[in-house]
Image (tube, rainbow, N blue to C red; front, side, top):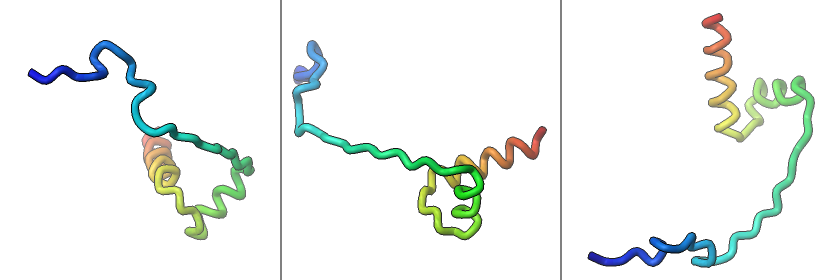
Length: 60
């Protein structure tokens, strides 16, 4: 059986370093709603969340 090199370590030092430069966009809910309604929003995760949220709210 082959031993896993990360078995006894956390392997944080394995692989290339990943550097991210995160930015936050602040927008009011009306602007976001308009973006989604026009179809300009490319964020499929937000669109899916929004669809599920609307379904959930319909159950109440």
